[in-house]
Image 1: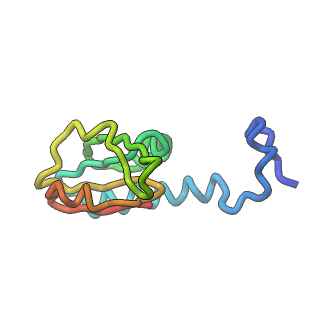
Image 2: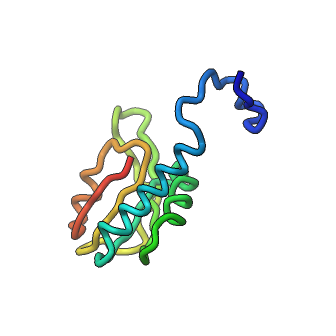
Length: 125
């Protein structure tokens, strides 16, 4: 039996934990080390979509050892149009000519970021 006491009422709906917290933390450290190596001499900006990415982005930032800038987008889906999104908050920093690391759990339309002519675009899911 799993101890789900730390999940509050959410624990009632959890049937199985597939990946442990320790495994996730280890993978985030590995990603941070790889990003630090791959972008050591680049002008890197991490972009996330609010709000779901906030906690993962914070953990990832702690694992990255190089200077990076951080920015967020906020979007909502159109209810009447399948697959359409409405931009609620655009980026605060320009990405033209920069290396952009787009951090999100679900990427439906990465073409918008690519259309902004970044120096490089990588998606971390």
